[in-house]
Image (cartoon, rainbow, N blue to C red; front, top):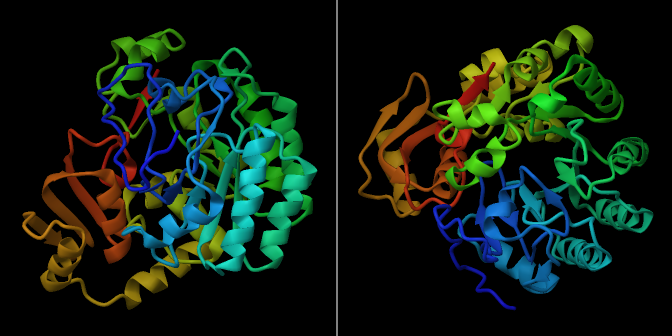
Amino acid sequence: MSYPLNAAAPPSSQVARMRTSAPIVDQHATWIAVNPVQGCPKACAYCFLNERGQVAVRPEHLATPEDTVSALVASPFYAPDRPVALYTWTDVMALPASRAHLARLLEVIADEELPNPFVLITKCHVPDETLAAINAARRRGVVMIVYLSYSGLGRDIERGIRHTAITDNFPRLAADGVPVVHYWRPAFPESATTSTMEHVLDWAAQYARCTVAAGLKVEPGALPRLARIWPELATTEGVTEAEGVYPRTFWEFIHHTSKRYPGYPLFHTNSCALAYILCRPDAFGVHRSTVCRVRNHCPAGQRQLCRDADNSRQPLTRALVRSALAHRDLANAPFRLDEQERELVISAPVETSRVAALTQDLGVRVRVDRANTDSYWNSGTAGALPLIIG
């Protein structure tokens, strides 16, 4: 099967179980997503790939590593400093063929000397030969960050996952100096017990640079399926509009992790975690927001870095905004600029991909109307808020 490199993904309202594909290169809320291999042999109950017919299937290779890199640098979303997440429509560690594709892709990225930070996300075992390929790319100057998805859920929800493989990854990657982010997502009532949460945090904090805690994404088509696992989803208003849904016990626990580990960062935003690891200031308009001030447990040095960068930015003018909007094919979109809050409000429906790109173009928060054709779930980058149950 082949798939056009610039084709649009189908709307999320198409909930059929037929196998549907994503663009090879797209902009997600935090990173450019690159998906030359799509489909996952695992069958995690919460995964968004369920509604796209892409779980419990053999991954399809839709572009060679060489064509993938060409498509990435040709994308209108590409810029050399922007983070890139590889293989977000599969777990690339799950099968030998996928891992071979990754190894070759890293070689091509190194050959082309791409300066972007590259992110891999997995909940499967990272074999020694794949770790060697990651380290070889790092030695050649490729910036690599590995997200290890570990939440304490059982195999009834994360079907096909060997959880000892997840935990074993942490010390192995850390010992090689690979920057590890603990991806604590999603939380269900089953895993939101004190004993489970303490066990997960105690293990991750030994080896990861930081944790990113994320709630459950509930698309409308996924609600009936997810409500069989978490019945309160069916009776709670707003779950499909939320940035993420959290059990209250989990929400309260992750906002007090500093008491257990005062020096260990916990973020609610991937962009902040990446900024911290890369020693960069915030580029997503998070600084000074409620997420920044109240939700993120961010080190003082990182906050100062963001504060200094914010103070040194050039004033945001309407002319700069108009130029940025035109660059993203939004020249006629009505907008309001809050210079004091460094927030851009666009009174028009805009896809998350363009919101995320605009956010980085301007370095400010961007709020828009939700686009009905948007295939991406609700995102905090686009202004969605968390919802807590319990």
